[in-house]
Amino acid sequence: MAIVTHHHLPLRELRFAAPARVRVWKGAATLKSGGVAVELQEGESFTVPPFVRFACLAHPRVTARGMRPAVWSLSLEAQSSADMERAADTSKPHARRLAAAIFAQPAAQWCAERIAREWQISTARLRALLFAEGESLRSLVREQRVAWVLAQLARMEDARARPSDAGFASQAALQRACQDLIGLPPGIAERALSLLSSQPRAALPPPQEGQSRQRRYRPYF
Image 1 (cartoon, one colour):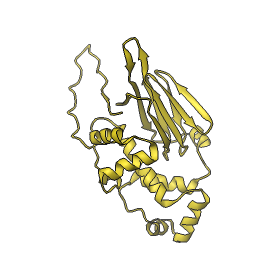
Image 2: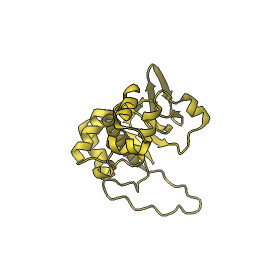
Image 3: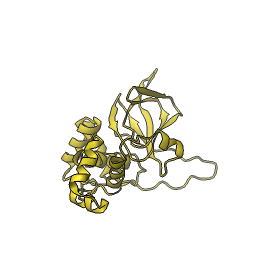
Image 4: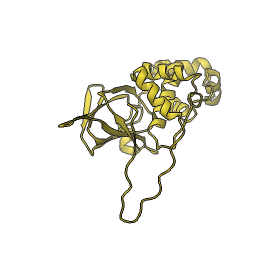
């Protein structure tokens, strides 16, 4: 499963508690974090370390027949290697721990009282820890709910979710969050999210001997 991008569309302010691998199947892409830029060509991939904020700009190909969409994929690593941990943002351990918990259960009621009780600290101490790391509970919850939605969009065709599965009251609220946090324009967000909530496609039959399985893409950008 991969993502088809028909436009020069930058996804900004992406951040995951786990390592995020971006692979380019067709076209090219630029990953940016701070003052660092990584250029990826067709067939190349790069893994962004945990909790490092980055932007992804996919570039469609220019051919004799016109613009051909870029095809790229986003996947989260199940485990973080020692090298990834050394490159991770270690300046925000409490925010990263909380982000991972929110991502695992985005629809849960993430209030300060509940988290403080689970961490066995006071709510004032919790807010102080996040404030010291330049974070707030409200913004972290919203960010990681959008991150969960984006990860669902990048899954195979059997991925299906509703706004409530991510903790959003409505489709409009989810679209606004995608626009505010990662820069998805309203029209594109509407198309992407409508595909996420639509009926999954039936699985293709296995290929016959001597035939290769044709890769399927979901064109929503």
